[in-house]
Image 1 (cartoon, rainbow over the protein chains, first blue to last red):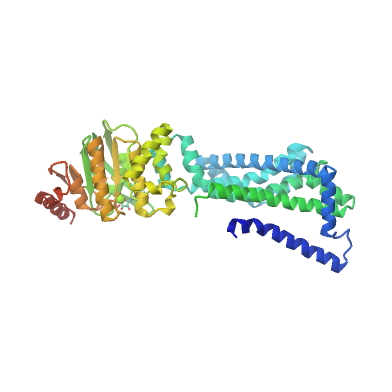
Image 2 (cartoon, each protein chain N blue to C red):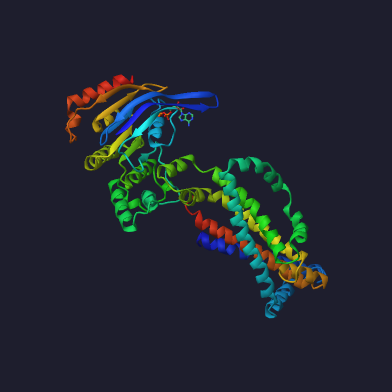
Length: 251
Length: 242
Ligand SMILES: Nc1ncnc2c1ncn2[C@@H]1O[C@H](COP(=O)(O)OP(=O)(O)OP(=O)(O)O)[C@@H](O)[C@H]1O
Ligand SMILES: [Mg+2]
């Protein structure tokens, strides 16, 4: 078996193992289904959601929000990181506050965003973007700072334009650190997207959770939780695949 | 012609200023082959970097009359882009200056053949040996046919056979194109064999100790290496270095 195939099978095998253990526990312990439904019931809830069309509505809403927020946050984070790397005065002025803010749990800002940007799509997007922006910005800054000085010499020697220098030398050289930031950002983006839907609106997997909880539909709640977990894994894997493609030149 | 007039360099280090280069005066004629030898740390790399514009001189000036365009530069250690293949690294200066694809491909393949790495065209730098990487760096410096070629101990990491072969290649390229070449080397033999002028520098802080004009006929080849004058020159250079 090739290592790629093994990697691809590892995750489903682990998930299957968890499902089997869960099923066994529910059968043997006799825990009531409104506390812990059997995996079969959760599966049925997912199928019900799928056949009624709700699954797609909620999933695509969350996914859309997530993807747009992740993309926008990544672009803004890269731009901010580049600005900090290029303008030392800016970095001196903002470096301290940024690192300080970095350690604060930014989801604490979520209620403020609702006050500032309303209950609609904007505040949800701002929440996701704000969570992605910081780690990406820091990854970009660290990456750009760490570019081998001799590669910068090469850029000067070859008289590259500022854009060529960035695109052809600095960005590829900073990519490993940038991806560290993107990984953190991708995980945070899922948290932000779900949290935004908990707080307001009538769409998305986060909303589905609050709805299921309020109406005591425990299998549906579990279905939403499972789907969210899978979504998070998928997003992380997407970043991972992108990283392995773009950084295949590393050992 | 490149005129180096009173160029000196003092670095500001953590332990105070470091004088790397005492004022240097040197004229490098267009189309000439100049070698610089000197003990380690005497400022050879610093001088070369100042000529290339990678470092600013603390005093003095460089007057560049005729060697226009991007200079070719081979760093002391090979500086390659690790995410590009050997071939893409050689092509890099052509790609970034808008040379048409077909033209760039042709030139790149020629150079890869010259450095003996055609079969490693698709290899990434980390899979190449140090000497192979340096050869790629040399090919990259030649790819855009610079009027001025500055080389900082380019052959230091190569085995004797490859070194001899590349010396002859370099001489052939120089004969055909009449680039202005400045070569920093630790090998008195290499300096004597290739150059019109050999500049000997004294230990740090570096200054020019002596300038030898090499009057061995060209074209040079295996016969040159048997010439008593060649051996006399090497002996003189060794004496100057001691
Ligand atoms: N960026 C720098 N900052 C501080 N000191 C430097 C710097 N670059 C070089 N030096 C110092 O300048 C002196 C000359 O260095 P240089 O690299 O030019 O020597 P070199 O003749 O090329 O030596 P080698 O033959 O070992 O390559 C050395 O003492 C070195 O420590
Ligand atoms: Mg040196």
